[in-house]
Image 1: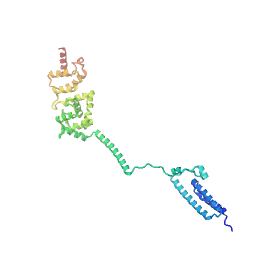
Image 2: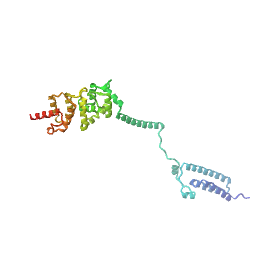
Image 3: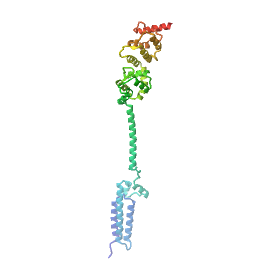
Image 4: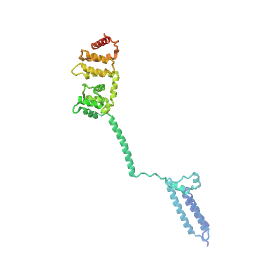
Length: 341
């Protein structure tokens, strides 16, 4: 009795092999397809060859099926990791996979090399360095801002450097104060500063006057006040401010129990305010020295400024019948006699 038809058995096993391989999908690559064809050839030869063994064919079939299953698992694993190359529409229709060289496949499978991250200690050190740098920059900006901003506390401490234990800066403290800011006590800028502080007595600054005036000037240190001196001098160039300072000087310089200003003090204050801007002041100063006047009242004081601003140097526009005080009438008469002689 003849055994089973080996050609029929071989065809049945060949169809079963192709069915199992088809489940792996069209994207399992050229190697799986090559292994399948090789297995079919060897099985066919084994079944059709003389003395071939069915059990040998089964062993080879199972071996190739196991290989195909492993390839199938590897492919799906790589597909989940997005490491496989997309299969074109034509390849899906034909069921063929794109072949690749060993180097290309290696590049597709292996992820790109990432740059080495610094060690945790290095990373912490870098972060700490950046943080310290940012903090130092912020701290220096904050300190600079605090130094530029006016501080009542700093202004108060500055005051007591010259006042000592008293609540007023006296003559000794005033002398040291003028020395620190680089200004002579007789400089006109000290009169302007006293006006800004609204000081009531010459040679004295009270605590209240100091805080009020320095706050308006935004000065709480010697350096800030030195930088403000040019601004104080510029106030004299404005006619309105000059007039206010001129009138303030009379009350500031006079004795508080007197309504008039001592003639010697008046000459000093007039020289401070008008000496450089009124060409006739030297002549007027000579007149005061030889006159009988011992004091100057506020009306006379204010009219001297108006006279210096409105009357010509040759006194040609002076009206003797005007509302000028007797002091100025006498000055004009004295000056004309002087010119004639």
